[in-house]
Amino acid sequence: MRAACLILVGVLLGVTGKAQAMDVAACDVPGFEHVLYTQSAHVPVEARAYWLDRSTLQWPGMRGGGHYRLYHAPDAGISASPGQPVRGARGHLLLSPHGADLPVATAARFGFIGKGARLSVAAQDLSQVPELLRQQVVLVREDESGRVLEATGVQLPGALDDLYAAAEGEQALGATPHAGKTGFRLWAPTARMVSLCLHADGDGRAISRQDMHRDDSTGIWSATLEEDLSGHYYTYLIEVFVPGVGMVRNRVTDPYSVSLTTDSLRSYIADLDAPALKPEGWEQTPFPQ
Image (tube, one colour):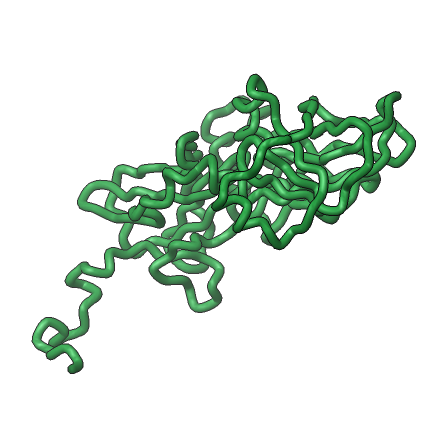
């Protein structure tokens, strides 16, 4: 919350230099997780349902009647108390029974979850699914009057794999320095925002913060800075929904880092093929047999 306030104050100042300074300051706020929106206490933390692919969900053990709706909220505001209507959602998808057999590969992958209500997203709603995966989602079984009978969170990997299979062949993830520029690429399909914090060294304050841009076909976020930044350090600020907590901003290192600081708090920018990183005699040393 403190980080969010810092950014807001920077905008209200209305002075470009000061606003940018406040924006960069978010990179150095103490701690690694900052709650932006708190999850309601009246919603289940466990995720008993599975999103099998972009159009199909399954709720193991659920055989009762009723209506099934998938509620969503970008600010983690959903309240789903038994016997009450759902509150705090931004919208919902009405799901219908899925009568067809699953594809062989899908059935094999999720055979472990057991039988239960299998549900379909309507064809006209499929375009909403990528955005819903970046929000709080709660699957609810309701009675005829729209009151909650049962509710659960949803596990997302099946839908993510289906939607973002194009990312599988991507090789250039992480920080890639070149002469005159450095590229940054991160696969984070459930993130609502990602920005790059750049540091001149391993423990000094951030010197810049750069918003990253999302490729909707792969879920990859990217940014390019017009300088060879070899020898610098960086972290990412990522806004993402965390079940049981809410919408948070995490400061993290890059999972595709080539190296970290000794305390593992920042990622290092380097081209491992650069001559400057090769010890003396490296090229003449024979490969082990």
